[in-house]
Amino acid sequence: MKLFPSLSKKPASTAEFEREAVQHLGALLAVATRMTRNGTEAEDLVQDTLVKAMRAREQFESGTNMRAWLLRILTNTFINRYRRGGLEKAVLEGPDADPLADGWVSASTMSAMRDPESTALRPVLEAEIRRALDELPEEFRLAVVLADVEEMSYREIADIMGCPIGTVMSRLHRGRRILKGRLYEHALDMGIVSPEAVVGSGDAPVSLAAFRAKKAVTR
Amino acid sequence: MTAPCRRRNSPLLEPFADGELPTDKTVEVETHLDECECCRESVELSRALKLSLQRAVRSDAEPSTEFAERVTRALSAERERQEERERQPERGRPLAWRFIVPVAAAAGVTLVWGALDQQGKGTHPDGRISANMATSTPGVTASLDQMVDELVSHHVQSRDPDVVEPSQINKLEPEVGVPVRVPSLQQYGLRWEGASVIPVRQLNQRAASLRYSYDGHRVTLYVYNSAQFPLRATLEPRVVRNMPVYVGSRRGYSIAAVEKRGVGYAVATDLDDRESAELVASIH
Ligand SMILES: [Zn+2]
Image 1 (cartoon, chains in turn green, purple):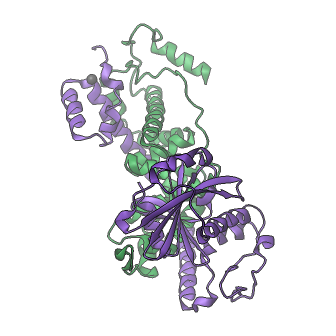
Image 2 (spheres, rainbow over the protein chains, first blue to last red):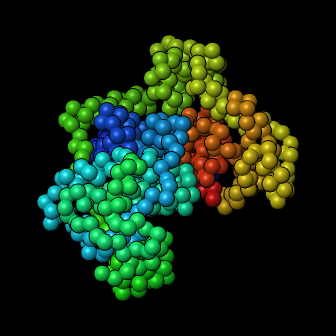
Image 3 (cartoon, rainbow over the protein chains, first blue to last red):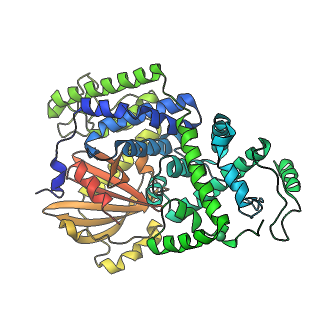
């Protein structure tokens, strides 16, 4: 008598599995590189992931999304092995002024910021985004990569990171807030947008220039 | 330029952009976006950031030819190992602790095979004898290994439960340090028998042990503080029902663990490891 009769199905052969898994090498390496921030470690992580996946290939239901399955193994391996003591604690928090959230940035500026095509600066922007991502505290970085790059659901991320959904949402929010701030500064530096007069409420700094000067000091 | 909308900091906007809102809230946000340029741009910026992140991350790491070849070699080697293992008779097979082997090998440790094989001394095809695993396996691997061993030993032993009435089970919580509930496993035909607190000496910790029976088999469910029990570090990760499950086997028993909100759940059974994994993944 079997508890789970559906488990009796035959797993894919190793050769089939190998063929399919190798197709995801690029996607896995991209994510591993952002997780480890180290090319060699990223390669080791991907190799470990694929070997583990091959050992556990009966667990993979053919016809479902192999890339997502491999990414889960990769993320678990990263959390368990490379960060066995748990993810580093995010200390970065504080009432740092946020021009985007605080409403100092107009709709037209936000519109200009999200239009990298018109600037012909896309590679520069991508490099900037990678740098900003690498500087995020690890818990935020992992949440952002899983949600935005891998498009996992809050539920999946909560399961994989071993935390409640509310924590996932807060990590995402804080991580993205930092990234948007960096994007905004980058857009200012590149002259894609121009500094605006502050429209916000009374307790905000007087001008954006003052805000940026303040940020430069606290950095 | 108009004053910024107060709702641009609404906790609904990000989940909306992520497609995570229920229908009624989605309609609420969409209605507001129709009339508010500021919030609309804020959502568009979130979506643009998502696309930029995807491009930035994916365009960065193109696998080198050498790396692709290295991976292919590693997978071929693994395939040969698996095929070799399938050809071997049951007796000579290493017990499923092979999952620790890469860790042990990396630490320069003597590999241990089938120490508790029913045949007595398990002899691996390459001749290593593993009767003295406690002394030959140093450090962290040994203690984690013994922790799993302890859980299996508890599973095998018969003992009278401290608590029989399911509603009384929260009495165990002070000793275990995490919430303890009786998961409903009747759907699989499992019958509740009772619960106890057991010491796990390797860790100087306590776990709740919940007993069930199933068609003459015994099923033990351990509930513990997952921060104190590094169980998943010793087991092999798999994905079952879209969640990570950590699986291994020992002395013919399989063990499978999940972690939810700081609480660890591990089942020990004499069923096969895939059934144990399914079972533990079904706990809500
Ligand atoms: Zn609005």
